[in-house]
Image (cartoon, rainbow, N blue to C red):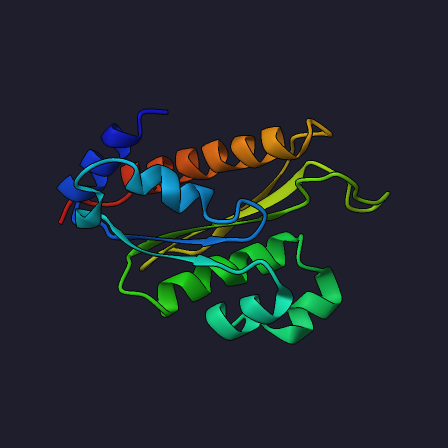
Length: 160
């Protein structure tokens, strides 16, 4: 992933980005802001590791968390929507998952849910099963996947 290229595309289209992260703990925002000049594109990042943080900072509904759990496409979608609502960004990505170690029969280690929200478009969500790669590798894979989602979102946006 060429992050500088992602940032250049966003800047050319007048897109500001927000991130909403749980299992990656800010790794997506850190990857974006490692590049000089990223402040022209990166509006803010939310690290919402607990359910309370997801509710307070992003407006994730307690009922959604109770019905589906934090690691779900429903929560990922609400996280991405909240990142847009509580920022000045026009594109937001969210990440919530089980990096490990551990997991359960129903939510195994390596399951990560993503959301991508853009002003004027329906929010999209997806789940990727990275498998039990170990905590560090799952987190890095989730970061890279989120960056690729952002690039796709930027490429689908009209130029301002």
